[in-house]
Image (cartoon, rainbow, N blue to C red; front, side, top):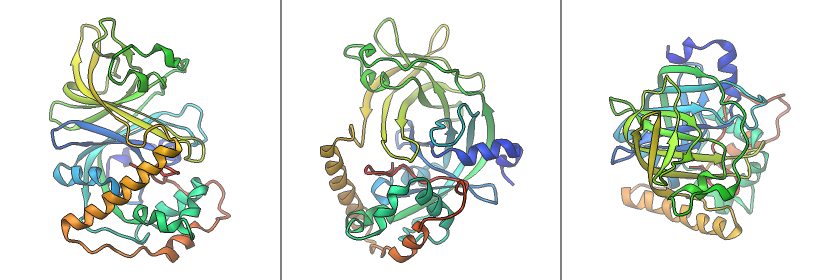
Length: 327
């Protein structure tokens, strides 16, 4: 039994319908960082998250400090116009084992192929020779300890790109989105998440924020995540603005320090650059640990990728993978 058992069946159906969530772990320096990913709800109340070894940082963070947070708040593709947000905090574990097979996560992969149809091409020749790194996975199991429901943010106009404050780190990235997700820490140091609307501070030294009353953030290292995908988990972009969160007289403000935009703008040049980077990162993961690279079981993945006649698709979701890799 986990904290998800406290949620109603209707809320759990909404959680299952979300294609992505924001998944926060704690970096080596204690900074909470969230990236778009996916979590599949299991029958035992735990959540399954996976990551390729090319983007192993989430797994490395979990092995060092298992406190995590997940926020289901980006409803694109879910079939819901304005669903409630669902926030989950808990502890995660990640084995050292790297798997090249979908065994033990069959529904996770089956749902990915259903909800992201173009990814079926990744398991067929000739594309699969470039995508083997993607199927070498680390499995992260999250045991929810707290779960809560938040109202969706009211509709708002998307700010034009021209509103970016000149010279303010991260302003260009944040100005492309109507909202962002704050990853901060609570008084115990555990990560917390909240979707908010950053705005350049009048003094030009950061972004002002308003947080929901049930978000127990405290001043300290923090970050803002923006991300998007279309109805079929394509057309992706994501960026993280790292900085320091401080309390103000009537809310909060984040002083930005640097931007992490791992997949760039999505241009063909960026796609080729990322492909080279992920293949190199995969090789280094095994070399540094003296591990043998597992074989990818292409036949098993192809079987799950076969088009299904099931209506709607199974609960859960696949990672953010398109022509750009998951994070």
